[in-house]
Image (cartoon, rainbow, N blue to C red):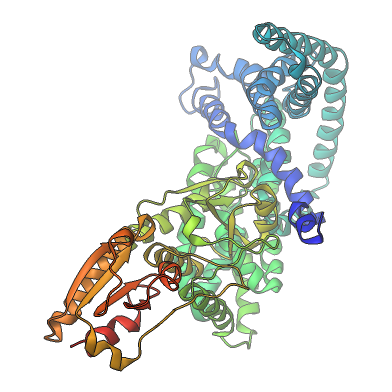
Length: 599
């Protein structure tokens, strides 16, 4: 095997940060798809709890306990198994989670997050050993009984061993959390939570750790402050307001819109680029987070269920009747402290407001220059891939919900205006990316490494901010160029041949212009024909312009064949009489040259 082939076959090495992100996302991946069920349970409890609810109703509130004990853990176990081994893993994951539930007297969220993936993994291993050896006609018997037997054995194990161990571990963690709260040390957790959020571990922290612990607290106290640690929008809104008033350049102009989306939409990822742009602002969000958590703890704030996304709207919906003032006070205090610290940092900043934009513009111009020449190289590995092969665009973020959905919506609108509606734009979580051909994956810079590992063959584009990125213009221009030019990218070592390009004097002998096309550029050829005809008529010239398939082209004197560089290259050695000229796109200056000089 050659060294180049070996390099292409090897997977890129995974950094420690990517490994931590991957593990954290795996944990949150079991919770995120089931947030709606957790919210439903929280609303039932908050509204119909008797006594203490908004509208107490003992009959309706009977659903609360079974949902907490059985429904939510089973959903988590099912999801965990499915993440490991699709449907068969999901079924086994749910079965073994039931064993953990029966073997405990506390909500088995931690047990579900352990047993669900374990059940899926065991089922996957058993199938890898025996499935290929099953005789034809016995597949259904094997599939059903193997899953049933593995599920039964693991469920018994979970009831006897895992359930009691998780109960003991949960009790230890609960004692630890209670102790931290009792000595008022909980605010110190924000020293780690706020930086971890900016490194895209927010879903892992909130949904993988704090939500399970918070739900356990709710069963004892009716509410939990842990739901507020990661979801508090105060630190983020403080930084964005400071940028709105005292920022510079594009950061200042984009901050007000980002603030609305962050506070009311709950998409915290939108303020991460502002922090990364000036790392000293970590002090602002840490200070705001500590202040907010301290206020929550002093006033006895808490939520009845997880608030996801971390919007002020979802937080207030999950707030008990007696905690509104405490919750709002914590958010407000966090915002004020974050705003004050961020303002001091921004006012002391002496950097040029255009520095960051200049770097972005440099990258944009460089990429668009390559696009104008039909060249776009992928960064993952040494393979070259072109925009002409893109069939679908996927926005990938950590959770696959808020920020990526927002970015996909923005690009979808740009595609519509650019006439690229035939290319679908969707959003998913990074963990759900598939290694398919024809994909263009757009993700945040912090997540690009993981995205490239999941989708090795995809064209990868990293952005700082899903809301406002110059890379969107590049994507649109590259795709338009690929469609209109019909060539897409080429390898660095290949060259576009514009064979027999005529000099200006040759145009006087042109009797007919033929715009050549094949399946790859039929639409752009029609547009080129119309544009060129209009230019020639505007110049009061009489030269005919026709749209002609490659097989109907005529190699004779007086014909000028216009087409993409790829098609012109194939005609170079075949045509001896007709003049050939290659154009890159519909705005190529050669169209003006032709219309100006033909007789």
